Image (tube, rainbow, N blue to C red; front, side, top):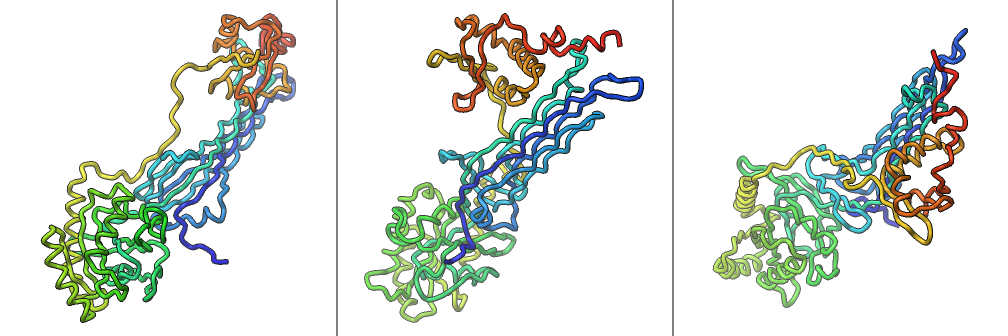
Length: 453
């Protein structure tokens, strides 16, 4: 079984690190049995970050290991000691990686060395009881739990970043041309579909240095899935110009430079999005006597149609100087016309949700409370601690949830769900019943043992 070395599409499952739990602790020393709360906070979980690394050219690592997880935050401890922050997980990706969600919607286009995207944010660490203390709650006997990290399934799709894209039939000499123009050494042979991955080379003409990429396996019907070109056409979407490499020495009957050009142009039109790219035509293999004659007959016709044509030989390097300078001019013009320089470092973080803090729905006789704040507060609550449950009730009341439920007609004994139905916490609604913290200490979270201290 062949092991792939070039992968340009992967599905990646990422999980950020969960936040550490806060701790409930009371400072103790001789003659001071209740010296006050000193529980530290939990550390935040580590983010999962995508970062463009120019040394990375393929997504093959994520093909083999599609599940990645950030570091977990450490738990707090007594003595006001906070837990360690979770280690962020930085995933290097090639320049030109497009990030999509499960529905295929583009989330980011990562272009430029160092460009970053936080694809999964780490969970926040829970507060310790020292941070929860206030003038009304002097000795909290509880702490908040750390939040789970964000989980997401994404698709990474690589679009090679190149200035010039070479298109043409298999064995037209695209790989040979890249080898002749640059120091790239792609696989070259005299049979179709030799090239199975896009090749990339760097060429220089005068003061302009630019990159050249080829599209392997482009044949008639490629835009409909035939051959290999359909999988690789996206690699020329970023190119400033396209160069048709036409084989003037093909032994296949029924083929000629003009018809080859028309076939490839039809495929580019069918693929879409490339109509505005300047075109150049390289009539290749003119070192073959018959091919030179065919090229001479074709040049006048193509130039009469307004097409820039350059007869070349990748084998003997004839005509390559003129072609390289023509490509350099197109690239220089495209760069000069670009009004906004490409940023080299952009950090993208999920934006805060706008709108009301919560929403209440009446579903099948039960009340469902949805919203970032109430759902997050539930995740932070230790339901084995009555005082923590009382603190949650106070937070929900201050947010207006209890008041809104009463206004909507909720009656004592009704089921109240907080969060999505498949993962909700269910409460019995009875606003007249005191929470556990009140039963223990009067006011929620207040310890009468510390009065007057």
